[in-house]
Length: 252
Image 1 (spheres, one colour):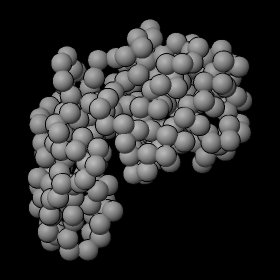
Image 2: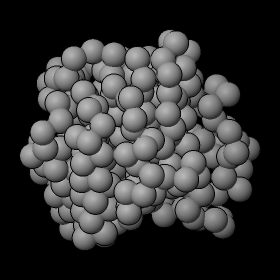
Image 3: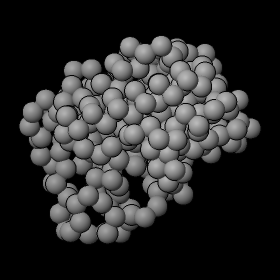
């Protein structure tokens, strides 16, 4: 099978590319680094020539609902258009567990992405996962200095490596429209995870938690991001991940 990974040089993308290659698939990594512009669509149809399945793990870090919606709708429209041209049979997109009632901020972009896919003609699977263990590092690195001010966030984090493998599992099967949600093995709180990572890395940083206002903040604190109902549960706990080679470049 020939699989294209949109965002293949990113966090989850690298794991998806590796998982697909390890299983003997031919893999095309789609990113600006590889000369393909997902915003303009330049080079996209050529890159998808002969591709059977597209895995979309593209990302934009923003708290602006407008910017998030524009990015994810533009990228998704361009991908779907190129897939129609080249005969792609299955579009797999990574989304986030529990965001249905959080149509704000970054999550608004992911919901717009889902709606765009559902309106298209390509058979699809939307695969939602909970936040990654690596999300803690991203938050800490965004706040250099002795204090990290983190929003209250109830989460059930999962290893990005397992997410990448999960997406390839889905790509190897038939389109499902919605896959069973993937969540981590334990309920956690973002601030607690940050403190554990700081202690593990031997750093000195004070973590303070605050309630983020608005729909986005209330959603993060609600517990909805932990998922409900039937789920697939990842195996790697946050503390296992801290001990693993995937935990690298700790924040200073």
